[in-house]
Length: 182
Image 1: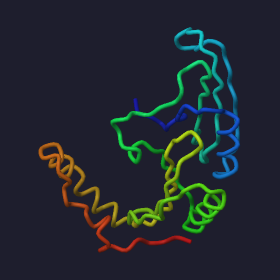
Image 2: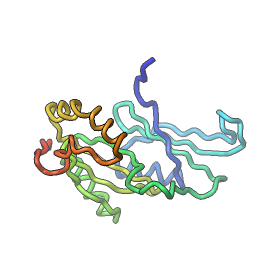
Image 3: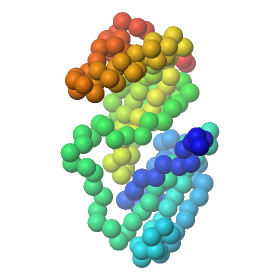
Image 4: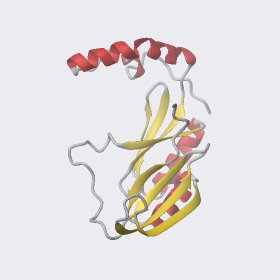
């Protein structure tokens, strides 16, 4: 068996309507489906929910659950806020910068663009506190070949030392220039 693709990714939201409206407005996603039940189908627990689905492009689906009878949303206090995030690809730097402008015009704090050499990214939070990253590719096949050659050595070194291996430091040291696609 080989996984074909991700069917959908689901997160919790505070308010399903607010969440759908936000993703439609800022990320141009289409609202494609809503499911609501009074019992959880997989466990039978009595726990009403609204489950909404958004088209994230190319068959990718982003979903959210509103759970009105559960305690307020939180996050793992032992995991830094920058770690757990959803990265979404856009087609160009132009799209990336236009989205950044639209978010900032409505008072949403945006970090970046950040040069990751393979891609350029902006970071921000949705109304539920989920961190999002938008990425515009700026890679070449040669960059991927270099990374492919060192991936196992990097993983082995990390497993033994828990110190960042330097095999791919070129990605963030400025020595390799990204290929910006407008």
